[in-house]
Image 1 (cartoon, rainbow, N blue to C red):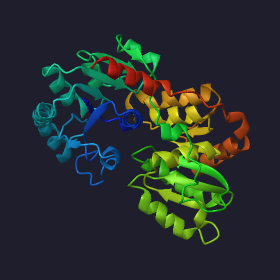
Image 2: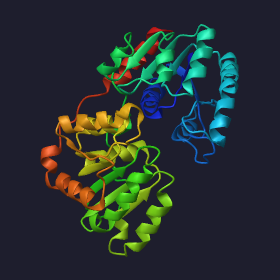
Image 3: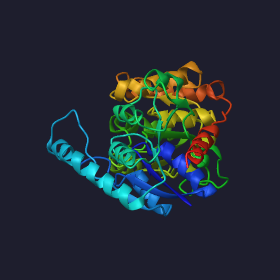
Image 4: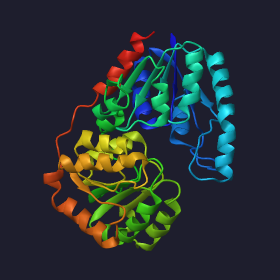
Length: 360
């Protein structure tokens, strides 16, 4: 059986492809990634947890990156750049993969370069409309460049449009109600800051929870850093309401699928994967873009939600207790108008699988 090495910092689309690969069993899989998202961070990444649960061999790469802020951790990160290159060469030499699948991010560059040195075909996937530096470099020597949006062709002219892979567990809602929900759930609001949470957004969200929870069941994916504050808030709601506020650090894909199929609305950051999943299901969304995202990518994503009339956009600057409450009430009141028909997005995963198979 051929061996496929997967790497990259954008794990959500990688997870979608891995799900399909595990089902088809055409490749032996190996994953090279980061155990911790940032220097000094003690919280393990989602990819480290999920890949190990799947039983896929894992390599932690001590790759460094250039950061805008100067700190002790940024200096350590710079030192790790040559270390990551040496490690990547060692991993490729040991595993001898037949093909490499990259999902971008600084972690992928030394792995892709090592693969190129060993004449291993590389497929790279770009999830955003404005490709980052890593994929712009990898695209120069990759066998195939897969892009999610036609706008990316301006930067990656040799790109092949495949779309953004979405996990099958998201598209196909499981029948069982997640065990963290109360037996008698009200209208469900799903608040999410993406895989890392959203501290600044959550600070305002916490202000509106006591009122919203009186008529809604709120599932709040907080991330690691806001979870303790969310639990303290939950304890102040009283027995009548506390069961209907459910803060969780992270949520499994199958549970996210159930939530998106049953939620009245999604409130949260507008990363590429969140927006793609929301649009695939057709659930209404209040998008609050991360203001310091690269190339203002999240605002671009949020504008797609507005353009298709599937929801509203609220800037971080205008976010307040009153404005957030009014926007959520608007979404709930006009839910039927904002809700859209689900779209068929399974082809993105299949196209990538077909590309991989054609190269080995």
